[in-house]
Every structure is written in C-alpha cells, then in structure tokens.
Length: 400
Image (cartoon, rainbow, N blue to C red; front, side):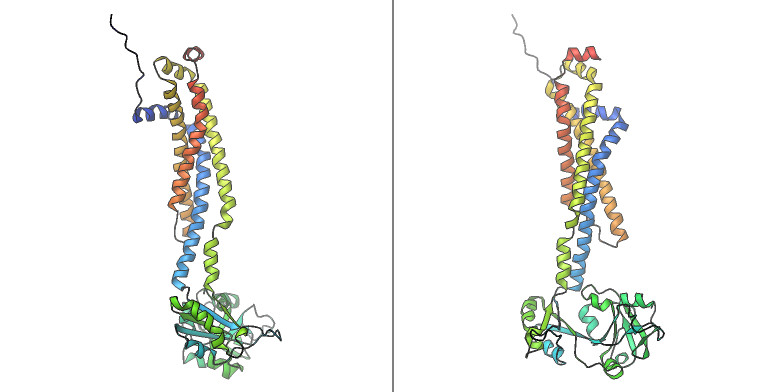
C-alpha cells in the first residue's frame, strides 16, 4: 500500500506577494488615493519643516564661512566707579594693530550730528540713523560690499562725502549715489550705499564719513568708538585677551571686547528649535493617516470576505492571507510616504528659491520619514490582516 504524501501549500515568492498585495489597491484607486493622502500630508509637513530649517541653517553657515569668525570688536565701556562711558584712546587702533596675530584693523567713531534728508526736516527727526567717522580700511575688515557707488578713500574722506548703510539709505529715501543729505549745517554728497553687513548691524543704520572730514568739518574729537580687528584663526583667543590691556593700558576694564560672529553661530545652532511644534503636528497628521489606512484595510477585509474564503479553500494558509493584507497596507502607506517626500521637498525648494537660500533636505529626514511610513503601515495592517486570516473559509464563502 502506497504511503500517503502530506500536502504542503505552495510558498509565495516576493513577486507573488507583491501581486496579491497590490490587487486590492488596483481595484479601488480612489480609496487608495484618499487613504494615502493623510500619510502624504504628514510626511510632507515633516520633510518641509526639517528642510526649511536646514536650508536656513545652511545659509547662516555659508555666511559665516564668507564673513569669517576671526573678527573681534573693541568698544568703549563704562567706568566701574563713575558709571559713565569712557573713551578709547586715539592711539588704540594703532596699538591693537601691533598685537601679534592681528592682520587688519578698522575704526569708527561716533559723531554728535544728525543726518537728515534736507535742512527743512527738524533735527529731532533722525530716523534712528547714527553718524560715524570711518577709516579707509573699515570696508576690508568688515568684508562688506558696496551695493552702489564707491567707498571712502584718501581723497573723498577729506571732503563732505558720505557712504550710507543699506538701512539708513532706505530710511532717508536715497536710492542712488549723487544725492545729498544734510549733516551739521551743510550738505554731504552720497558717494555709495553698502550692502547688508551681518557682522556689524550698527553700520547698516549709520551714515559714514571720512575721519579727516569729521574732524575738520564737524568738530569730531578723534576718539574711536569701535575698533574692528581681524586676526589669524589660530590666534583669535589669544588676541582677545590682549585687546583690552593694549587698547587702554591705564584702564583695561573699561574696554569691552565682543565677537560679533557668536550671534550668527548661536542662531545657526538653534535654527529649527521652534520647528518642534510643527514637527509634532506633522507627526499627528501621520498618525491620523495611519488610522485612515487601518480603517481602509478593515473595510477591505469586510468587502473581500468571499475572496478570502475562496483563497483559503484553494489552499492558502492563514500566514499567506496575513502577508497579503500586511503587504497591501505597506504598499498603501509607502505610496503616501513617497508622495509626501516629493511634496515636502518641493515645498522646501519653493521656500529656498523665494528666500535665496540653498536647497537642503537632509538624507536622514527622507529615510527616517519613509521608515516611519512603513512602520505606520505595518501597524495599521496587522489587525486587519489577523482578522482576515481568522475568517472561516466556509462562512466566508457563504457570506459572499
């Protein structure tokens, strides 16, 4: 008598699993679209938030690379005893330039005169514009650029010529070199307008005249108010400790030394700190999308009971039914994830283009976002898959 051979179900290969798993998606495209939309919105929000934050941070870091982090500023401080502002010595810029490691020095001094568009405007209406005397080498030290016109030089610095910061030019209504502003009882000709100066925002809100013209025409006392210096990168810390005693040996405690690049560095480091809330909202949208996928899969199981019963009666195991519906859930959420990544990257690109930023979408955000959609899809499909596998073939066929 021949021994009976035990029947074993056919094993599904990856291609077979993909085929049976996508069958439900192909038959209900509109439902698939609406279910995947929630996943796509959540992922798009998360990708866009991370991308916009990373693009802004990349711009700040690029500016730091261009401007350098080796500039220090010495300004007049306050006396510990009198509480009054103390002036920097006239010789301070030259003394600082002799410190080992210092490569260049630029100087400004505050001039007590208002800057007005014309003599008909009251003196009190200054528009927040300060007047500063400036040495010729200030532009190079700040690594600033001219938006229009030219910078002060040995010739123009002796005559009633003025260079405006971009903010002061806007407030005065000056758009082109050659126009005039009223300073100290006479008109000064605008010879240039500066681009924004991120490391010295006070320059943006100032009008700059030559050092010699300030002394001869406006009674400037010649004491510097701010001394900007550039040093070798490996000497910044050492130079910082020497600036105060060098600038004012008799009272070094009255000299304030700051690093203007620290503000940009801190801003770059904290960029995206306020995006946590938006990331949370994106995560909530992703979870809502996952609930939508789970709901879709449960409805799909109820609608396809006859199909499930037929497959079971033809030899499909419970495990194969589970794999079918988990695969369908994964495909559904995966499609939503890919669409969300594309939408988020496009939104980041639009924002970067509008703000003249570099387009940056971190790889970790893309991979992490897609992995989260697959995790959501797996969790959303488990219960419907288990429920489908538990259906009795006989009852399922009768229900069909």
